[in-house]
Image (cartoon, rainbow, N blue to C red):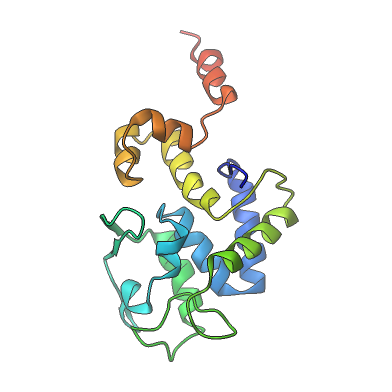
Length: 189
């Protein structure tokens, strides 16, 4: 298995989202929710409609998930970007019941599988010129990378991602030599 890196360019994120939205609003929605929540793909794909929406017109304030990997509770608010993507997508599923999978497979109605999500993401990433190894974990790392580079305290990111140390989080989100060099070159005190 290849190690994957975060997507570090917001233009590439936007381009991937546009490609996915043109193909299928479901895919644009799970992509957007993933990069705005830091959820592992297994937890994301097992969400139900009721996890994000109380009624067809009322959104939940928070998503609460018991992580499959850690057994820990993850409780977080939906960002405006995630709500917008989910609203556009769920408008195409007016019959969806709260117990229905949020991101069902088109073939059998069960939750979209990890391998299907990877294929969808990989194809869109290649279409925008990303050549680095890509995987569904790329999205969780992208969340952490952009949180860190936007100035969020490393301890908070560590807690959100349920990591045991700051060093683990730094390695995980892919802080590169170029990122460290930019500190030296940018200070000029």
